[in-house]
Length: 146
Length: 67
Image (cartoon, rainbow over all chains, first blue to last red; front, side, top):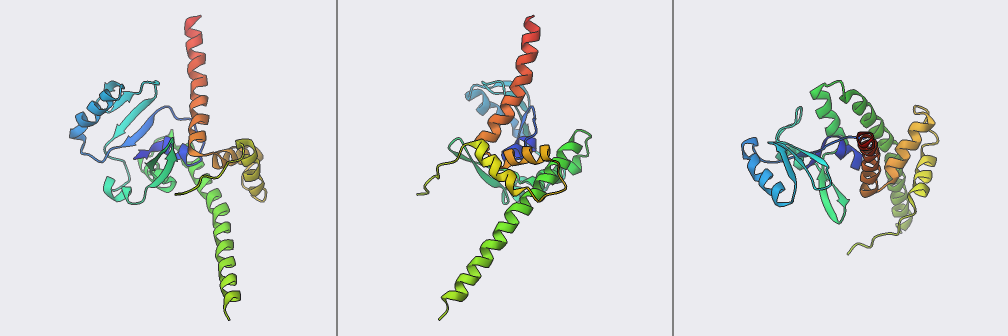
């Protein structure tokens, strides 16, 4: 699944990030499985967990994410976003924020602030619409009653 | 099968999203515009926006190297 700031980007937080972080649901000792797949796809392997795709996009493979439980548990709450004809699993914004808080790096402070602002905005806009839709439905039901 | 709606151009969608943020006081106008653009775009468009931004840095670095 896609994690890190590239996952946040796909959910509307426009922050530039250099690499794409992909969380792999395998134990880290099985990194060769991932690397072999990348080689087949024409990527250049740089290290055990870093490859460069044919368009020079750096991709980092992560086998454990700080502050988050296991891959399987997180995979249950992923968001599937349409992306060039595919539906890709993406870690939700609140979970990205949680992992960044747990990592506690200086470079993440701005990202945490932006993700929190985005979440607040999303709650504000979609929340109101959802409430309005629910209200409309209940009034329609009330009117439909004989 | 789901029918895909015809999307309006991105600037128009962003303007509509920005109008929704009109009542928000805790963000300044520039930040609101950036979030509006981010929320209005589709995942593919968001990806392109960020990639273009990064490529801008890359190309400038390469052009310096060439010189």
